[in-house]
Length: 135
Image (cartoon, helix red, strand yellow):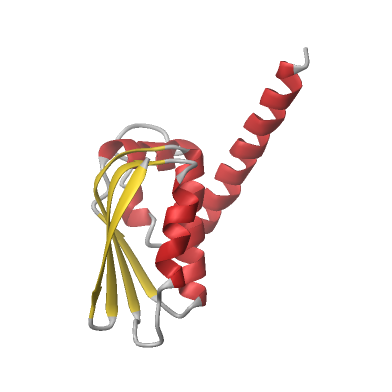
């Protein structure tokens, strides 16, 4: 479960996340964008206290990023911990530990790659779960 502390500081919104970034994060993250005004220009997401993330959590974070950019917010995600970085590296197909995916996340092309691969992995998992439960 993810908990968010949201602070509005001038033209910036700071989200400090704690807990696990997983399938339950979507609604919580969406509520942040529901409160954005015309005055905010930047969204800073601090993940220092997020020690675990799964594919669903990654997809929710990518969705938040995409929606925020659609609202003309500049987005910066900081504080990547080892497990979330490893999750991104695994999804992206980057072998080995410490793949510096936190730095790569800032690149739009890398985010698109992650989103496509994560969605395929989740779809495959959903299909396998549904198919295997009937066998």
